[in-house]
Length: 273
Length: 152
Image (cartoon, rainbow over all chains, first blue to last red; front, top):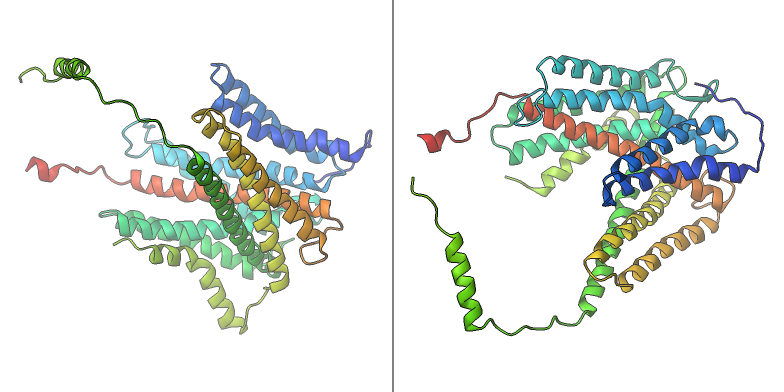
């Protein structure tokens, strides 16, 4: 999927603002609107707004080829297929098992395994085969180097963490923990392969460099998010502390207590079995 | 028995293993440029702080619904977010310390935001996969009878 420059009709910054940044902002706004508005039609409208935003962001490499930011839109278009396959596949596997509600037919399990497998192979093909997202021929989308190591490393870390959690908290969850150790081991194997086996466009050394940048990135995200949450908590704490004590009300009178007692008595008890 | 140390160690195990393998086979930390990694860490911290503050600022509207729409926390959080923006602009403007392959403060700031979106997307997909596989591993087991003892 290569990008070719089209003619420029308007100012580049205005073009990027209208055709990239507004669609980007439509996604969280649409989700927020669909969840928060009390109107019955708003969930549908909000979802449509978010969907339209995603489509416009995916189209941005063609609509705003001059902006380097649209490489992210290009990446989104490239990975949305395999990621959806993986997530839908896992959904089918989960809900075709022993769940009390929303149970799917047992046959969906095979379809789910197939979908998730195809999704992973598709992503691996982006590293070791001809599917690598390229902005122009032989130029890898720079954001692919951000997404791929972060995803593989974090999957391995979280699966390992989940396995240990299942062993520590769960009762008789050894089989499930082993499954999670296998997932963590598989992700780790993909990571090691990435470090040692070159793809047609991505070398092992490049992957190694970006892997450590992904570690720095994840550490930065954790530190920054924790800092902002602490500041948020501090702001709320200071505001709540500055509020005056709530006014005390007078205790209930004798007649009020009698009324409450009669109401409670009327709603207590039940039929004899 | 549940311990946080075990959880953190399990989480950190894969990167530590990569480090150990690198040290064994290459005799050092191959591929790690501490300057570039620090720049990325600092940019990620500033961007995550600013964007997360902005998100929490949005949440204050829901908090305000139950508190008669107070201005004080809103102003406080706007100040905290503005602090993040100003710190980002100031620190990037100091020179090459926080500038990656970008020529200006604005280009670096925009790059940071896009970079954060991509990283967050990767985090979201990884969390979905890990949680989803855990859930499917649990649901794929035979149903248990948790009331066996009570019935006996």
